Image 1 (cartoon, helix red, strand yellow):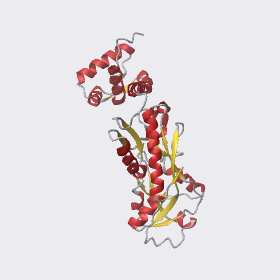
Image 2 (cartoon, one colour):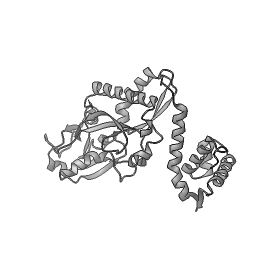
Image 3 (tube, helix red, strand yellow):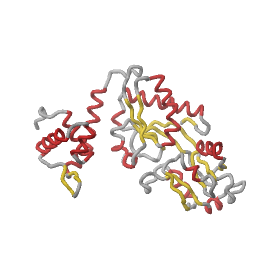
Image 4 (tube, rainbow, N blue to C red):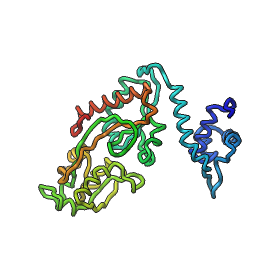
Length: 315
């Protein structure tokens, strides 16, 4: 196959076309004109002998070949980035690199402040972009982590990628200060009778993080009657205040809610395993000097959290 006539820009065009599934969307993503992208699509179609995009109704769908090309293109672009960003050594004081880390709102609040302070001290010209994880990035992490530097997520939420263990915390039950159905002790019978507020992700079906503790709830014979599904972790206690609901949240969030909302906090009346946070990444980052530095930065940030924030222990 003749490759000398192809270039990296054409690979970027292909990636944008496959991800956006339209010439206009790809042009907007690449900040190029539509005729330029149309010309690239025509060239790609000639090269592959395949239309790649076919019209379906008001939009376009990927051909079978295009579907197969998507992960290959992502890997190729990631590989090119690693090639051209590679350095014999990584100097954080001189680096202008941007790292992308996936994190839920709760773990961003836990790890973000310490991480940002350390970044300012150690790599003042670098930056970290924190993004909320998308469902597919957690359901298929070997695919979802290809184009980011990693994810802050609990053990049990991801399977397969390498990880760096960071922090551990316990679970607590929270109820409103004036909840008339809860006395001085929260037992299993009372817990079973109360309505619940829980975290639910965007899919409302695959509840990756809450399921870690909810599995333990169900193993205790409880089938919670959920009244409220909250879209973020940190919002859950607010849906307990002033109601007869109960929620199971991380210890630090429970104690914060007790201080700021007057909620009452109880140790769960059923066995629970600690919630353990880890940093996960795609294996292709393993020998990247900059990524190795990022992992050390996150480990140091976790040490700060364990020292400064109640309810957390270093793993």
